[in-house]
Length: 263
Ligand code: IPE
Ligand code: IPE
Ligand code: MG
Image (cartoon, rainbow, N blue to C red; front, side):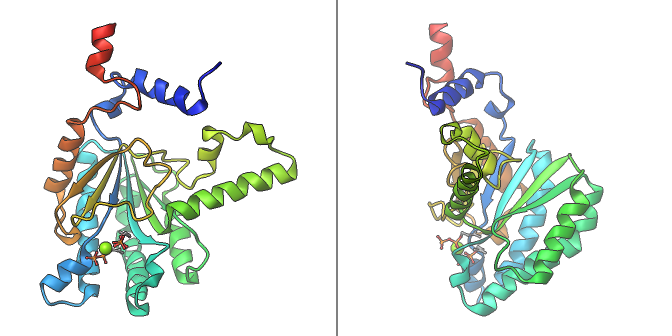
């Protein structure tokens, strides 16, 4: 009996672990940028100022990431559940995406950064959609660094959307149900281009995923840092990368030392 698809890809990942560059540096890092509200509250400021300060932390982190050996960065900007916040705060978060892209697009384009926005487009205002499409179009050929912004993104929504697309292909007669495996499924996720992150960081001390990259988190290393997002900077990113390097990624197999011992 042949091993299931998941076991095959885990075995492949394990056999690559010692030669794969991602064994010593996280090539793809994802960040749950949390704690803007608490940062503002601690200073007696409105939450909006916490979010604005959070954009500066994002700029610092994007600049520091390539220097830390990172090739791809995915950041959680707005979740499908964040619509539950007061209308003024939602409006602030929408405007911040717009002003971030407006202020930084030229520089990102010049520096070879490809910007992608993942998440549901339905529900976003026309001016937000227009700026997202412009940013993606203008940076589409850039290949130095990938900045992926998860906006109106939910891991469950992304999985449901992927399932619907596969179902449509089956209905149209272009896909046989028995061809649906992990690889076929991953191709339909919004993260298909970037793949799964090696490392997921969450700031602010909370220890949960809050619906971020649920499928892709399967074998990510998780690092929780006790810093509020507006205070985040290059030293915190370096510390997270160092923590990642101390981890032993096993993918369900044996550790690197055990492989050497039995070779
Ligand atoms: C993260 O900070 C930003 C978004 C969720 C958009 P929060 O606004 O969640 O800050 P806290 O968790 O209330 O401190
Ligand atoms: C997750 O943070 C969403 C983003 C960082 C954009 P939340 O602050 O919304 O998560 P919960 O509500 O604490 O789980
Ligand atoms: Mg929060």
